[in-house]
Image (cartoon, rainbow over all chains, first blue to last red; front, top):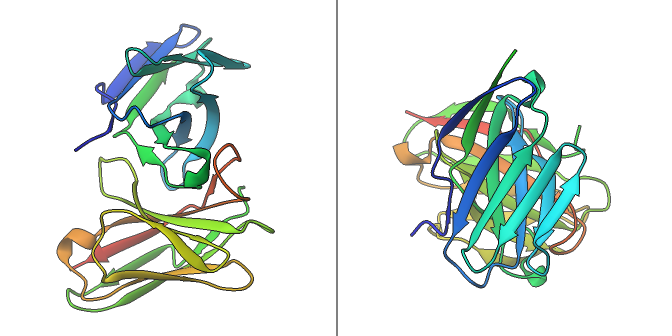
Length: 114
Length: 113
């Protein structure tokens, strides 16, 4: 039972263009969502998060959109840079009391071509 | 640099053996959790410790156990290793609950042969 899904295992984009990563979830109890970036041989690094009371959160080149009715969120990276090439994970939390109990998607590997 | 350190970084064990993985959380972080990431998959939550008490567990059998020490460092122990336990084991720490940034270590690669 995969409660968080990233249906695109990989994405290739030209430098300077927009990268759009998608994530779907099934558990309506999730109320906090996070995106992590992972390079090989490193642990996941926090990128950006969004609470279920919002529909958009922006931090520099990264913007996360949340559509609660569709149980869908997306991460936009504009403009994409070669250093953004990594695996991106979407993760969800059930409540603020859940601590670190993250439910992760399977990841999307992004390749930004110079 | 997240301030979360894990050891060892790589190890090979034989099926049936036991393994202990260690995690030193970021200074002051009282919540530590462990994840298993199999190749090509996202991390799966194993369990979480808050102030030395386990307060959340994922869908893992009892042979996966843990400890958190007074200095908030943590151990993951796996008994009776199986081939499917081969994975990257990640430790994550934070100060308190959700909404606070969760920091991950670089992980321990376990290969069971």
